[in-house]
Image 1 (cartoon, rainbow, N blue to C red):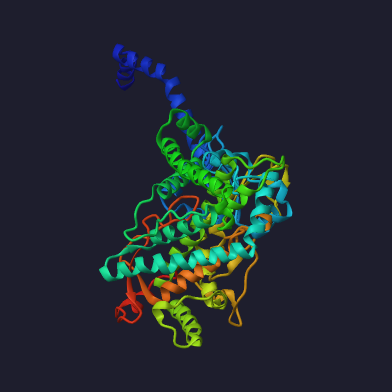
Image 2: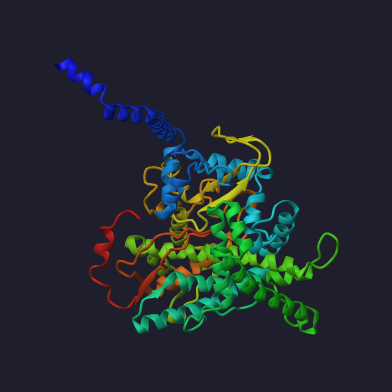
Length: 547
């Protein structure tokens, strides 16, 4: 009976039709299973490669998904974690057929190799020049070879001249005492929070424009007016940064179609150029008139305007514009951004602040009787501020103004750590990550400790390939000494008069840009030194984490 039933069931017309349909579907089912198996294999293979390469590398997309996730958070901390896991160097593989392929390193041996030992084999490169060309042109920041060497030589001679040094010091004193301190006094009297990062950026922008262009844009005036040139310059810098996080073909297409960030960049550069070319025109007229004999200028624009190129012809307006824009970019952000992070760190480390105040107090007491409100620090006094110098260097170690920089390999090479570099490879050295590498700075690398820079109470510098905040080798920052002088004068002038308190719960995170801006600025309130300090401040700050 059972066997009979089975026969009837097997030969039933309905069952036969269903079975036939099932057999017809078998090839499709097998294809789906095969694709699923391949997907699982690729996923497992990609995840296994993560252990060797530092990030998961997917077919076609490469490591782009990991980069996107990193950018959505704190990309610098994310990159630091990857480099720590990989021993200081790893290769980033972007999507196929894109320019997002590079070697990223935070190894001091590799930095010395590319910045000094094999300097000529690691220029800025075509990729970097192409990305920044619209904003920076052929200025010193993006140029290579003879174009760079000529600008560097002229600027170096000027930076070390007595006239230039005197001009930079005088302009800084004027800005600090005629503008910065009155702006801070107004904020204090009105009992309103102020964005200290914005104030510092305005200060350094005015200062560097005086040095580079010989003109004062007036950003740091009462009321903090919006200056079109300054706003356009900041917007152009941010839009240029976007080119480094998208495939070259994408931003070039956006530029061609005049869309998105490229339209923003074009419009910003038009404003920058209009201002720069007007200053150049006026300066040429001034230098060609009899007025020039009575008012000799030491700014970089005037110096380059008086010179000629290798063919004996005056430099073009375009070249002069590129020179000035590059020096403004280099000089505007380094000091102001470093100072913003410095004041934020002091807010979390009151003992460091007290040590700085003790150093300043010792210097002022040696003067004898000068009124606090009129105190102007002298260059020799600023030079003696060793602990302040150390505290600023420690802030730059943890929060370097330029968090990463770029080079390109001319000929095949090998890094000291064994990393093979093929011709055309892009190399990024991660300055931010270097400050957080235990292998470089020890187990306390994550702590803010100015004492690590002091020996017998005197400041002791570190190798430029270990502390790369000012670059190293032939491209060592020309303005390093002035940047420290500027930061020390500004910091001492503020701290001597005010306690700077970060507004409670104000978010402080870095912004992804060429420079390590605070994404939301630095909102602070000011309290004069002769006013009572909030009772809970010290206890609360001491309980916070190391940074």
